[in-house]
Length: 376
Image (tube, rainbow, N blue to C red; front, side, top):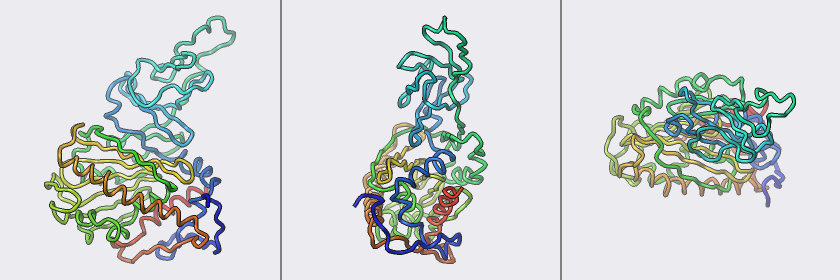
């Protein structure tokens, strides 16, 4: 059965703003190609999208590129030290300008060699001397909003979007409480995962630990689940265990670091999760990127005080890559197959008044943000 082909046997129950009363969003939101097309304008092109880290853009001319659905963006450090972002497309015939990441002296199109300054202005055009009514000023690169948040670089295709720090007020303070050295970290490693499910399934999965005891035996030996709580805010939610069960656990061995805790994670709308493991300083981000209705590309980027991890940091990274991620990927792929069943349409959030570690109100928070975006 192909995604979107299922016909549900039950009528849809309206999504409720009260998580204790609400059903989940209907399965068609995960399966239909038309929904994905709506998401591009309603979700992806209107919100802050993780692009990388300021340590990857240390000097003038250092750049990285980021893909947001069909839109490709350049982020580059100019000669005055400012970050700038542009649509990654030559204003001549539409060829892409830069690929991957690196460092350049000028932005030069590999097709016809039109070149641009870091300020986006068109600088040189071969064989244009005799052209009538040709004004270089009309062919500057099209700018995109860019912002640095806790060292992470974000872009937003909506020129009217409020700053990320304003929309996610309080998040930076929380991150700094668990990683006081966040300003000192540099890029260390990227792990990539290709997952056979819709991107929203993976977000849903991150946002609750109701599944942790049955599905993540090593994780629940790492953190004190009795203190694990989820708190929802405007466009983010916090997922924190205040205490580690033991430095000797089934996940990885660690010595207590500058902050004693079990685990700290955050979801940042629309598709980013931020992770801090206990022990030596570390912070990572896991981004869920749609690659069609039935496929997601996940990037997990690790940032450490030094590019080369210590043994403890390597153990934490290996645990994430080799144990926790495969466990979650298996769960999410099974859910996506089940969403295509004629025997399923909507479920019910398990939400308790105490908002305990078993409550799914964090999933409801994401789905509420999603439904609000899709209805505007």
